[in-house]
Image (cartoon, rainbow, N blue to C red):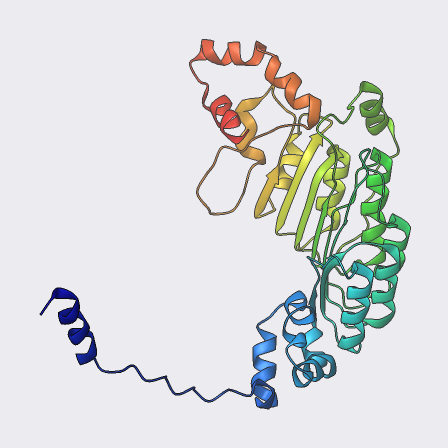
Length: 340
């Protein structure tokens, strides 16, 4: 018997493979309502609107008719065939006034729509969809509408926004207006967006120093305050500390115009448990720890820096580093280099 016949016989000895019995097709539309609700509660707003609700009519019915699913609205990536304003309106409508937390795009129309229909809102985080090259408003958003909108959230406790930086007085007015509109906020974060080449000129600094005395409205419930890319002085810092008696965490990055703190201001800073002030104070590096974190966490050397071209100018100035080398202590400079 030749090899080909032997191979043919061996193959015939193998058992015939039978087609597998198809498993029972699961009817996803027949899942109990409470099971579907628990599943959807684990999803985000975008996953529900452009994912789960498209599976079948039964699922879509649950996503539309259950306000519980929309107590937290989180709008980030919107498909090309939709739009941010449509997504916000749909989500707000589905919440039926029960929305407690909103994270989404910042434009006047959507914000006012939210304000008129979300009296239970406690947390509001807004971001700009896009910015022009010169960092002017590009989404139809404005400070004025923001202030009017947050006045309509009587339960608001947490506010976070990222507006483009326009000029010193505008940033101060925004912060002051927020404090006046919602004096019972517990957490406030304002992150100003500015280019690295922002023109910090002497005239701007003189305007800040010689301007009117800053007065922070009383914020009797504020626990945490974060101001990013902010220009301030000792008077403003003292006003914040004096008018926020429950403040536990204070984080300000940007430019501290005065450059130094007197003993009284240092004592006020010491009352804040978590303190992080980025100061433009290269002349007195030995006092850096006094303005750092007052919490019980591991001691770290804080980094004091200004913004934009001031950082570059400070790096190019070798005077302070030369003095440190003579003293044999350059640890602070190494930490700053590591940060950048």
